[in-house]
Amino acid sequence: GSGTAYWASTGSVSAYVLRGRTRVLTAHPEQELLKRETEFSTFRHMTLLIVSWNVDSAKPDALTGAENIDFLHNVLQSMDRPDIIAFGLQELIDLESRKMAAKTVLLGGKNKGPDGSISQKVSTSYKKWHDRLGSAVRTAMPTDEPYSVIHMESLVGLFTCVLVKNTEKIRLK
Image (cartoon, rainbow, N blue to C red; front, side, top):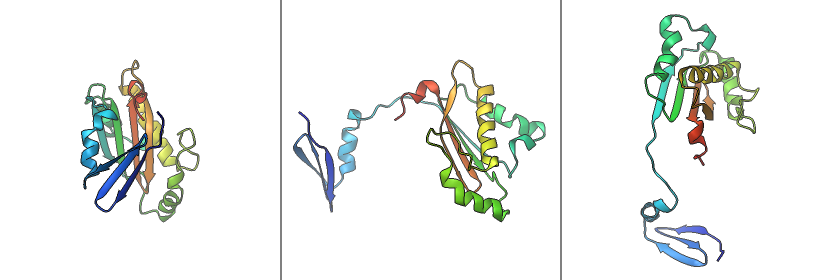
């Protein structure tokens, strides 16, 4: 039958109600949930490439020298077809510039549109790096397994961009 599910916790005793039946848990509800995790979770092997790069407030089109130009391509080629690629860039803006830092703080929380696309309110620097990372992934990875951006976040000079294979994206919730 149908019913309402809810969770209640007071002090060291927790309980949940599902389909009209109450179940009282011990002092550690996390342990009860771990015992039942196969009911709501699946586990499988995935590969993850994490890229951390201090770009020293450089814009992507200002990178010069073979070391900088080839960095993204080389790091993306360092692993065979990762399922998830996570970029963490530091010092995207000149933190000494008070105007840029203030603009980032004030507009940083409004960086995505309703469809997940990057907003016009994001500084040009973040948009350029978003575009550059997407281009680097499209160039370095096989075309038969494209990637999509599933998350991006910016905060005062920091930029995180997470891409996942389209074949894996459908499994995310």
